[in-house]
Every structure is written in structure tokens, then in C-alpha cells.
Length: 204
Image: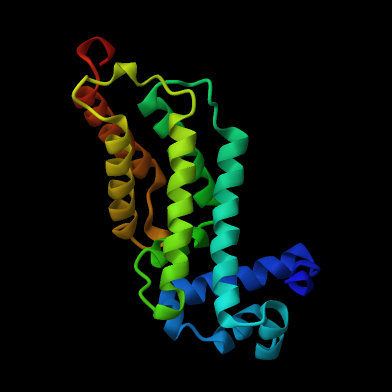
């Protein structure tokens, strides 16, 4: 991996974009290292020279995309915001802004949720579990949960939002057709609906 990281950033980006496109379009098994190499303007041998194997490249991409989001959230999320739904909205706005800058990451991350190849499936499960731990931390650290109705479990609400987010992402249109403004409006409407139903009346 050191050989790849020693390349100029623009060359790294070209290779990463080519690999993201190949895996998100074809899935792990059908993605061709030869196609990745051709799209990146390098030889197939150089792909293996940089990453060692197709599997190592695949998991590097997951790590790369994950770090993009984690670093952006850690840098921009205001943890002094203690309202559950306002913080969820803030985190989602940060993620949408990042996707606008790196649109290929969305298709790739969406694809890993539905990847069933035995060679990578278990590894993906472990990574997704760590991602859930991170989401729970950024949502609940310093959170005021007293606004919820006594019959509502905030952790269950967070789990439900994760499920909804995964399902919603899976049904997004192709990247060139995404209306980010409409996406944000729909998300705001959903959060408002949940807030009105799960918060005590005085906080609605």
C-alpha cells in the first residue's frame, strides 16, 4: 500500500475513481481488475503492485470512503447541539455535502450493503458494525434524551433511522439524476414527522 500512497494525489484519485466505478457497477466478483487498470491508465500488473490483490483493493476502498465520512463528521459536527433530530439533520447535511464532492463514493457504499460474495461478505459485516458504533457515538454523546416520550427508546429510534437510511439509499437513482435539494427536503420532512410523533408535546 505504501507504493500506492507514494503516488501523486491526482494519480491516486484516478485509480480510486476507476475502482469505485467498477465495483459499484459490477459487484465484487464481476469487477475486472483489467477494466480498473484500463480506466485508470495503468497496467493490470501495476494494480497488483500497488494493492497486492483485488480483495485488498476492495477493502482499501471501503476504508477510504469510511474515513472520508468519519473525518468530515468529526471536523464539522457540533456536539453542543443536544437535540436528537437536529443533530441527525446536521450529520445528514454534512454527509450530503460530502457526497456532492465525491459522488462515486455513494454508489460504492450503497453496493457493499448488498454484496454477498463469500470472499468479502464477513469482512464487510465487521466494518458495518464498526460504522454503526460510530453513528451511535456521534448521535448520543451529550444528547438530551429527555425530550422523547417516556414510552420511546431513543436507541430503537436510531436503529430504525439506520434501517430507513439504508433502504432509502438503495433506491436512489443513478448519481447523475439525484436532486440533492429534493433529497434534503424529503429528509427534513421525515425527521419532522418522527419528531412530532416521538417527542413530548411541549418539544414539538
